[in-house]
Length: 98
Image 1 (tube, rainbow, N blue to C red):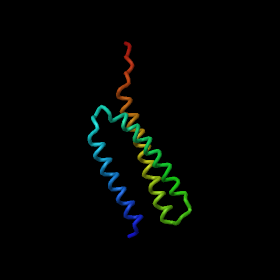
Image 2 (cartoon, rainbow, N blue to C red):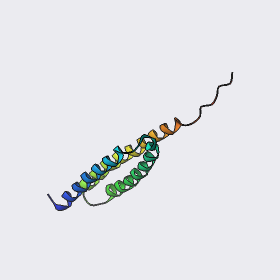
Image 3 (cartoon, rainbow, N blue to C red):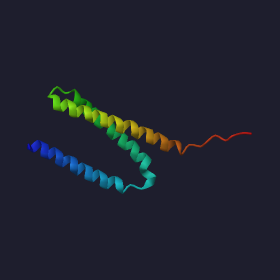
Image 4 (cartoon, helix red, strand yellow):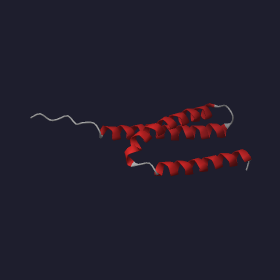
């Protein structure tokens, strides 16, 4: 294995562990603002994956970039749908006049 791949895997595993530790300690009251912030980060990763997929290096880079684009798109769209649903819970319902 090349050192670049090993370092990439090391950063990925370390990032996943730190992210899990941080997110597991968030109080329930802060989940909606945190979801909005992570949507912004996912949007940044979507842009990065588009750059990786569109770069003209080799076939493997294009395939992995396309997979990353798909995963990031699902993450962004799902995050916005969940955030919207959570925010709708806090809106006042109109009173029914009889």
